[in-house]
Length: 155
Image (cartoon, rainbow, N blue to C red; front, side):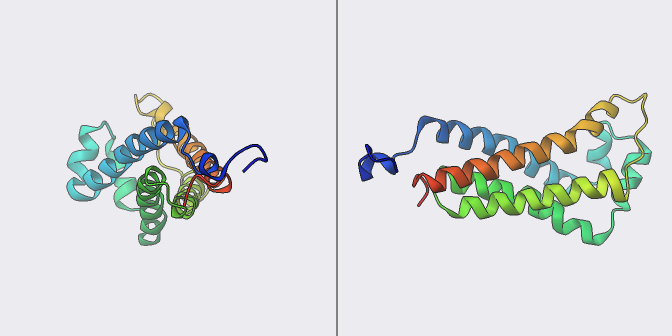
């Protein structure tokens, strides 16, 4: 709160909170949809979205411990989006958990066990940059929620 702001003005939600919150919920809602479809329909869904057999095999062979960062990344972001729209401080923690999940997933997919990407496939470009974009968006959302908390917008 700045010196020239009243306590009521300090806690008022700026217009961009609603914009970021709705866009975040849409973006992360798609991630949740993808998670549910991948876990529920497995190979059939992956085939529908254009995964090669090598990519399907890669995801089906994912170690059990990778479920934790995937769940944390996806559902932390969805919960964070809802909490941001509800103007709750817990949004900061939810987005931080999501960022942690996204970073661990990025490290796994880029360093520990890179997926078999066919450079000639339509998915090659997306599979190369999408993990970086996910981490970038997760970092922005964690920072944004933190800054809204510091300004007294989140309760």
